[in-house]
Image (cartoon, helix red, strand yellow):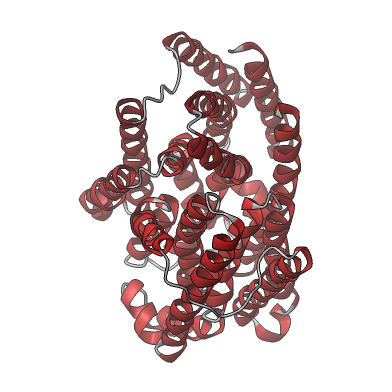
Length: 484
């Protein structure tokens, strides 16, 4: 069982890395083509709402769907699945139509601080990206159906297809469509993603796909789960939305700079978290249904160890090599030295939140598996909409974009400590023994000292990054092998 788990995680991780690299390459090329200009802001902003609903609503649907669906017999599964996807099609279909009918209203509502020129372009691009909302939300729901049947490769590969098509069309059609190529790429990618998931559902006969609504008690149970999930299950996406809303009040290019830097810190934790939670969440719900608390407790501690030993060294590396990273990856074409100077300090601040954001997502999954959704929702809302916005509001005028990044860091750490505390009190889950915490603290000091020494060696940018990266990898492998 353990060997199979790690094989699946390894395969899913590889596919996720490639898919994420496609998405990351898209950001790099946008930087090359448009730098930190209002055009880059508009390309990024036009996809914000579809992507937000894809992650937030779709993620909530998937989590609630797996929790309920996995505990039903075969007949009830069919009726429940058809009912949920029928409701989802109606609701998201209406939302998509509203996006298409009133694009200026929605973009003006979220990005009110944009210049008139940037807001006009964003609204026009939004008309092209709006249809992706329907296909993206339905796709992530269908991915949950595949995951509960252990078709992890299909759901993960669909994300690979989405990012690949998005990148191919966005870059390939730029000479013809300019900024609009990326908007078209987003919608085309979502259609391909949706089609792939549908094809394998029909091929494997997982669920008869037809419009059907059945009244059943599981619908209320699903609704009870999904409402708090909408606010508590997608913390990172709420951070992104708030970051872009406040950045729209700053000079042109602020949204782009924040986007480039936050995506850099999102990559390591997103790949690992997506791979682990794709596999572990269905297992957790099954263990919860069986009342196997010891299995849940072991998974909790093993996940904490893996996350800390991998992500903390990665965070230190990103912080110390932030300027070199941005220069090497982005500083080409229209991404100037000034763009680098505006972006790398943000990357340093955002790097401090890598471990806390990953832990928040991880611990929250355990609350959801045990169908305790209210408490993590309250904590997430308090952190994102309370502490985060408070920090930004206090320091935005003085520190500009750095205040936005600082708000994410402080609120994410507060949220992490609160989740760890209440997981212990309410779920009886102990994240780790004190002996491991002490070893981890020593390990962190060693990591900081060694990586700091590597920055003193006078290599060029490329060789500095290679050296620092290899040293970081060695520290991670050493930590996983030695620290128990």
